[in-house]
Each structure stands twice: as C-alpha cells, then as structure tokens.
Amino acid sequence: MDIKKIKETCLYVRDLAASKDFYHHRLGFPVIGEVAGRHVFFRVGESVLLCFNPEASKVSKKLPPHFGSGQLHLAFEVEKEQYDAWKQQVQDLGIAIEQEYDWGGGFLSFYFRDPDEHLLEVVMTGMWERGG
Image (cartoon, rainbow, N blue to C red; front, side, top):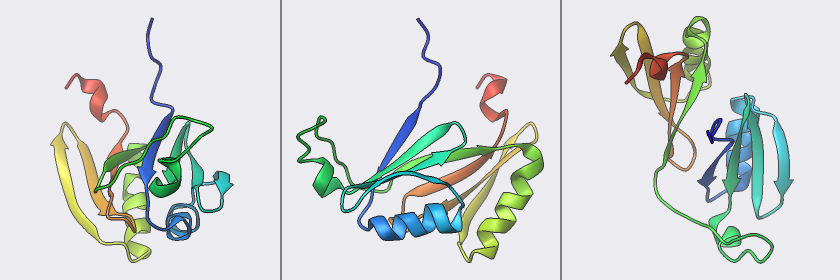
C-alpha cells in the first residue's frame, strides 16, 4: 500500500481575514471553503491549504480537535520555467524575500513569510526527484 501524496497541509493563523487576503487576493489561490471565525481553505495546485483559527479548531466537537502555534514551514512547487516569474510576483507584491538558495543541479528556491510569520518557500519542480 502506497500513499499517493499529502492532500492537505494545515496552518494555524491569528487572523483569517489577513490569511485570506494574503493567500487568495495576493498569491491567487482559489478559496474552496470558508467558515467565519473557524477556517478558510485554498486550492493550491492539486493540494489544499487549510488555515484554521486554533482557538476554534481545538474545541471542535464534529471532528477531532487540533491546534498549534509557532512559525511553520511549507513549500510550493512551480515549474522551473515559472520560478523567476513567481519570484518577481512576490517581490512586486512588496513581500520580502528572506533568502534564495541554490540546491545544486540547477535547482533554486526562495523563502518569504505570510502574515503569521510562517516560512513559505517556492521550489522548482524536480528538486526532490533526484534522490536526496
């Protein structure tokens, strides 16, 4: 039995409206679910990004409670040919790029933060397919 992929990734955020503005209005991710005061969900390629209010999700009765805090990390994968355009788009939005890293083999990534200081990364397709 093989797992195909990670379908969802969850971030816990202080301000759902600020997260919606950042991920939907700035980065362009479509909203696929929203409950005021509880969560906003985004389509990111074939995956889903869940942004939860931790105070609401930790007292959940319908689903198992969950919550967290701190500066988490996740990476978005883009085609090599789109990498520079994504980097320029992030810069044009006035979002500071903290670092760009050369992983070798022609693979680059860059790092930036969301409104909750979660560390986001844009990586080139194929980076982890080279065995390491």
